[in-house]
Image (tube, rainbow, N blue to C red; front, side):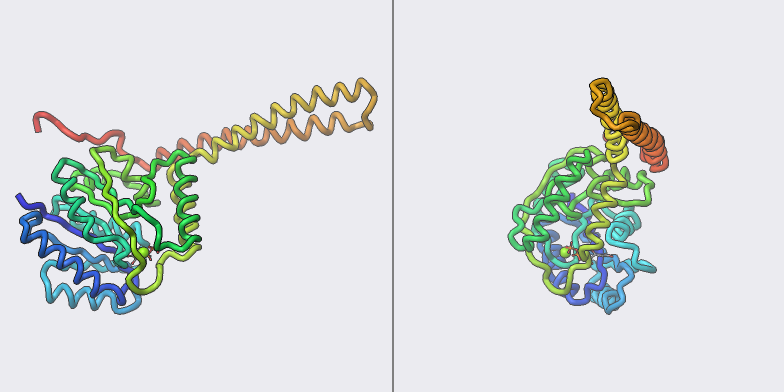
Length: 315
Ligand code: UDP
Ligand code: MG
């Protein structure tokens, strides 16, 4: 049985790359359809994320010429992650599996073939992982690598060197749709779903045309969002620092008493030293304690599902 594949492509001011993207994707679709791997119901879904240029008119034009191209226009610029969600969720009833890929052709479209092979072998999520970062600037490489390291350190389970190029089966998307959170960080959310997963390696090339829509400011806020919407470790760090400060207060206390007895102090020094450390430590502990409760509230308000059923022998 051929697979019905949807390829979701978020586009924000991508008029320069769209015709090439369409060409490469439709060629791939024709090849896969000829080999009877994908069905004729498969679609390329462009999600126009409130572009200000000719992106939408191009999408409409391609859609008229080729019924395999479908366009979804968002009413305003909702951001990359939200655009991905819009594409995956609004077409969920129509596909067996969905691949998300950037419009700029940095990700090799041919990796989709391997992703489909893994899907046929029973994988529900297949991550596209870049094998090299040769085409990135040194700056982008260093910032990206530190990003993955910090995320790991903070306890967020992200796949190293995987952006948002991935295949998901319909049931994986259905499971994801049960995550009603507002701050999306798909790279962190998808690994928490579980299911059988695998990776496909590809070489990442340079942007085909146009400029990156992720300037440094957006990149930093994305990284910060990733951390703060996934982990309460920073709050826990405050508690730890508070405990350490209290311990130092005890050491300082002993030290001050010793100095006092041996008469080596100016009057008032010992009491001042002890209070500074002790009060400081107490304040941090208090903040950490409040933070723990806020952390609980944070997890609660996300209303994530308690479990996801993978199989049922009577269904
Ligand atoms: N994008 C989007 N909305 C935005 C910013 C970006 O839909 O607000 C899309 C963009 O059109 C592209 C993808 O997200 O298809 C990735 O953006 P880009 O290639 O500029 O990021 P980079 O590869 O430089 O990190
Ligand atoms: Mg890009």
